[in-house]
Each structure stands twice: as structure tokens, then as C-alpha cells.
Length: 196
Image 1: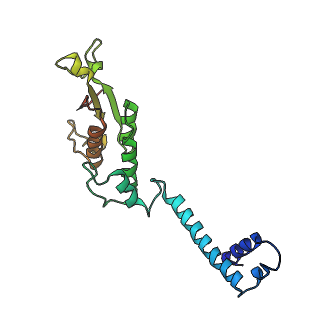
Image 2 (image 1 turned 120 degrees about the horizontal axis):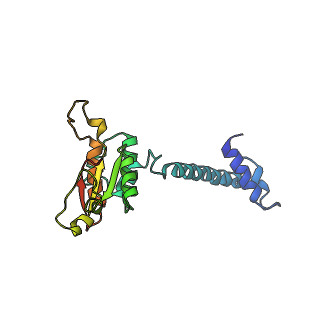
């Protein structure tokens, strides 16, 4: 029995018994054809609901990736194109969604983790008093120190194993740097350094 026939039977079961709807189970009658038409549309709408349910999640979508990118504003200053793989495009949408609520050091770390980059985030004030953290970072005054976020992005994946590190920025590192600059509080400066 096809699913159309099953759905038609389900609809026929909702009609009351009696002479008025006696043709509900007879093939070719107007009543049966009406029920078959309704059943076909119900199956089509059910398929659309299942597709929507599967595509609404940004980390699983394939068909609605363009809608997600448009909803979060991609392309923008950081994400300049949408030509990457579907996995990269999903990650970019998730990063934009995550960046909407960045407030704490842990939020910055989580944002960098989406790109596979380990980040250490500290307040600048931690470097302006005893005991000193190394490397020592000097600020012109305490106000500047309190309004600075120190960020160390792990760049070990792009460092040659020589006695002196030659670093090359990766595309992910550039994206994280751009995103950090966009989501930082307006009254705070970011300082990208190598922390111990």
C-alpha cells in the first residue's frame, strides 16, 4: 500500500459514517478523489516540514546555507566571500552567531576554538602590578591597562621548527583576529602578544 493510499484512508476515517460520505472508500468517486488530492498535499507538506527541520540548524544545513549567511550578514569585513566548502561556510555562520554574545575571556577562547586556534585571554591590568607576569608589558597608565585585553593566539601550527620561529599567519588566524576586533567592547583595546 502506498503512502498516498494510507494517507487517503486516514482522511477517510475522519469522515462520519452514513450515506452522505458513503463514497469515501470507493475509488474514482468525487469524494475519494478529493481525499486523494488532500492526502497528496498533506504528504508534500510533511516532506517540507521534515526538510525544514533538518535544514534549520546552521551546523547541519546544506540547502539553507545561503539563507543562514544572509541572516548573519556574510559576507562582511571578516568573511569576505562564500566560496568555501559547506563545512567552512557552516563554521563561519556558527562563528557569527557565537560572536553575537561575546563578553568574557571564556567567550573569546570559545570563538577562537571554532577555528581550531587555542587562545589565552587576560586583562591588561594583570601586567601592571606585583608580582609581574612575563613578558612584562608596560602601559602608560592604569586606566589604559584596565581597558586593554591581552590576547595570545596559538600559532604553533604555522611555525617552522627552527631555533628562531618564523611565523606565517593562516587564514583562520586572520579571521579570528578580525572577529576579536569586531566583538571587543568599544572602550577596550586589544593587544595581540605571545603570553607565557
